[in-house]
Length: 314
Ligand code: ASP
Image (cartoon, rainbow, N blue to C red):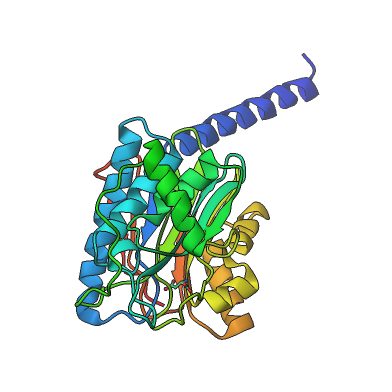
């Protein structure tokens, strides 16, 4: 055999070995769930409470995956936990608007087909994330708001898509919640990506105000490559379409942690405001960053016991 051909074969063998190694690495990262409990000016003594909530939320989402659920199933389960725990700014524990009512926004995104469901400014329900999923999967629309979104909720209950866990709490809770907006990104064993966000919005908002959380690309985004979800001042996050931009950085070749940091740096440069972002890609790489005081974050990768939490300080 001529030496050139030998060299060619040798190179090919190295390449193949390399390929095998890449495949192995890819497989060892999935599934993954990354969860945040909101970026903001957390009181020091409330941070551990927030960390505990995101831990439990991540566990409940991961459990859904372990039981054979999809990324969307896990993302809904995880977000429902945070809406129902009463200790974060979503669902039952949401911050009230100026009328003292919990007026909620939420979104779920399915990266596999670029589908999403959103609900905004809804009053009187506890788990807007399930309604967002119903809108995405069972209606021909993507986004409902206000009183008429409540009619869609009633349709959902009537059809038995979800049971009403408990009538939505419409009055402000006596103790203000520890945390902020919630969200998660889930990548299942097949590499399908889902992202969510759910919130009561910013403190003392005027009734009817809607932030970034239910806005596709701003509050959350996912496609076949990567998913992200954001938290912080919605008025500013919407201006830079933070979640979509962060996913784009990954598509352009940045690793997930650098993309999260670049997203927050870009956000700060353009708006001077505060936000946080979490990211995960189809191979199970993840990243998170904030320029606010704190953002409790929990990650579970591959198996339930691989739980890691970060307060993610700026
Ligand atoms: N992004 C949410 C909003 O503006 C608030 C938050 O993340 O804390 O409604």
